[in-house]
Length: 364
Image 1 (cartoon, rainbow, N blue to C red):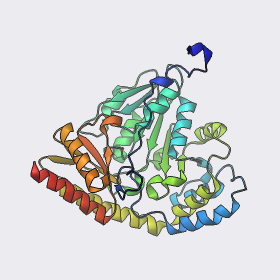
Image 2 (image 1 turned 45 degrees about the horizontal axis):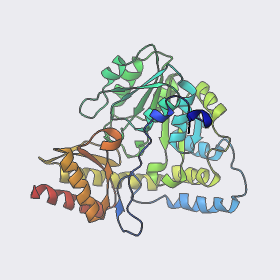
Image 3 (image 1 turned 90 degrees about the vertical axis):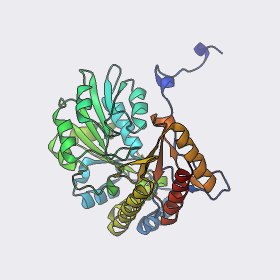
Image 4 (image 1 turned 135 degrees about the vertical axis):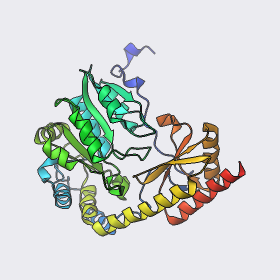
């Protein structure tokens, strides 16, 4: 059938490679999923209670601005709730930012192994994505700045980065911002901020408050509420106003709003999740680090393991699957064919993964 006889997408849409989520085990199997960076401790009990209570009101539209959630986030993080926008996951907010600040002929800059959603939302807005090489799987501030042109409108920066786990210090993020024109929007995507233990890291709230061209985006997905789809953004008044003009009127459902507010306030659970992650992230890194496996230092709730060759990475993936562990292949989405990303899970899962991979290493 001719394209003239059916609706056709806008130019460039069919050039976009779709997002590839982490694999799950086959139905009916008992595989342990370590491919999507989900919480190994489940959700906050307080969040679960709040969601169950909200489920009794499913016939009622949610409050359109997510006021209760914004107030909880403001209370916990010391932010004016009026400077917060909530979304159906942080992806929702990233899409809205791209739609608002990018268009035909514009460019957005990102590091080579940044989050794979950035090219999708950039190209969907009609703009061009410019990927900049990294230094040992870490964003290079000088290279990012060198890639800026008169057409640059947005810098996408995942900090810590997915899938590498690397991060930029507060000083480096500030150096990046200082080199940008005031009309370029710096988007700091802090999806893994709750897990960072590095003392020189900052979520960037001070920079957001000081400047007119910086926003910080966060998510509840890594904190045990991935199924609820809750994201939030802090930005200057003019950006908040622009995003609120185009976001969906009820873009965060009522159970998610209530669960998110309870989860934000459950500091004890969040600290326990962070401590569990830090312990087993460091433990697994130590166990796997060796001549045939290299673990890139991570500040997230996963590690990226690099093998000598793509063939060894594929063999490691298959061996883990056979043993009941589903990890993330990062060649198809990120071009790191010799790497696997492994989410930090339960103690039993981490010991099992370590045993499988170290046994494989010793057999080579």
